[in-house]
Image (cartoon, rainbow, N blue to C red; front, side, top):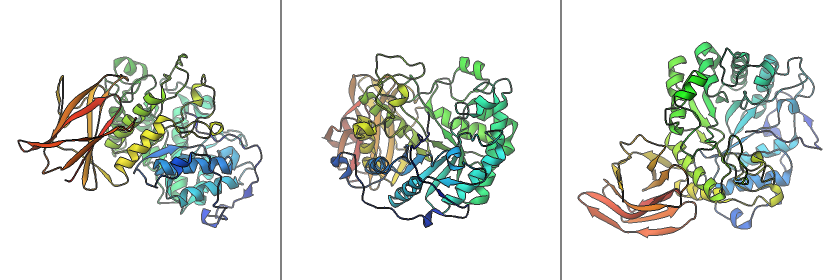
Length: 494
């Protein structure tokens, strides 16, 4: 997906020397003109640990402040954004400048107790080679020096190099087959940029948007290039598939790409595990962190049929986003970031304009169902959640499933447990394509006691109290709805 700031028609820039820090930036008027509905802005502030959000910031104060308020009300902990592209920040060789609105936005994010993932990318035509490796490394060092001391969760080197600039300039197949020149060139760029960032800020966490078959090839051929890399920034879009799947895996894809980056079912869980653990440990002798910095579904006109994505309804987008989020958190990702906060435009026939979980600025950033569903999920889990593996069984009308032993994450009932303070919460749903069909089941688990239970449909908000009984040493809760829309089962009084 394109994560770029649109050109700002009129900006005033100030020269920022390489030794400057953001703490020295002047404070700005804290009063803002909010564009979001008052019912959302009045909600209490909370955060969901590891919840990120892609936002396009640094354009205009009113628009930026409205988006920051939206993210605060949503429970976002980490903002993924581009503090200006390389060519915007270096318009004269060796002289670096940031848009003052970028300064202000960074301070507002910090003041809101949110962290940042900063994207460093796009070519710079000042240089004979617009992807000059040494020049880009110097730029990365300057940005890391400038943001040192700010709440930066990670620096992400580039964004989708096979789609943006790198492959176009150097050539070769997107999947790296046939010794594609762009793969080795980008691997070298990653190494030098990461070293420069670490020299500027030794405590920095660095990821790279270098995933899939090209990543595996690069790790095998030049493992030394990843010495300063802490993690991979994944973009596991399901495309036309349900939330639990990715369009990779299986023998046909293996023959096409030469490597496997997902299991034969094309499961989301497997693609995260294989690249950061299996292949990283094989070639780098250590695992890499998983940072999911893009994941989404467009709510475009369903009468059109885009090549790579299915246009979905607001309700489907909401259900899929929560299902992906829960799976991601269950896999220990450092961040799970929906793409994106707000629509880029209002053309229902343009897929790229409709990935937002809220409508565009021109439509007042009106939240979609996905925004509310993610907000509801954030309120249920909060910042202190802990993944737990309980001795629990879900029994449905057509049989039973014990998620403690099940490994199928792409079809059938799903049940994932978290501990939140003194309570337990399970998220249950039926994996696969959206369906209006739902069936009731019962959950039994071995815990000492639970005095109260309730179910919450995280898409619709429908909430019901459930009876808790004790049967043969197990706590049992009946009449749990399990369908395409995730249900949260909360147990309290434990």
